[in-house]
Length: 305
Image (cartoon, rainbow, N blue to C red; front, side):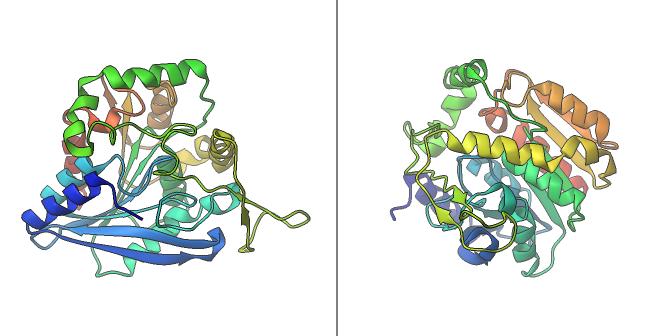
């Protein structure tokens, strides 16, 4: 399958900067397939490793390439992977039962490489799963949550607010990375071939848990939204967040209506010593694009490497 133009440009940037890149796959029998991951390494020996978990409907590379550049320039290796059910080259399926272990599996794969201080970043769904992994005892030096939900119930007004992302300067700045059409995110059926979401179904008469084979089924355009909402609710993050001991930073847009800043403030209250950054004017989609956000994230990680 043809790689998008922005991926080719990013790899060319890595080559020009003397940085290394590789693609790898690892097995996820719990999710009925395998995962594609990428490893990006700075020109000088890295001082730490970042494992990145992306948002629903995106993939290991989109739309966080600007953040990856900043992390690499800060001397950090980046390990980024497709969440279950995502990615053009991955074959896994997304269910409420298997998704919780996807971050732990990625961390295990990252830890199989030469040892480095490891930091975990998760955005939106990836953030919820990253927080769950940290609460389950993941071996990490720091945790960064970007727009991570405690609950999801996106309605028409929230989606309408997200459409205003296209009016923001941060959106247009990223066109140099992704191109005019490439910067448009997937939503419902739009761009689903580029950013697939494969939902798994449990065969009738069998239990949901366990590594049994699931069958992928064509799903209505927004079926994944209900699956993800139930998945996040099942993580029960608010009830457990006070148990977190790893240094944590929270990064949320103050115009995010999908994960409103009230959830950020609740997490900041629950997680001991969490550092909260509210990004002025940022929506759910543009938070990572806003000026200074990537540097802020990298600086926090640098403090704990």
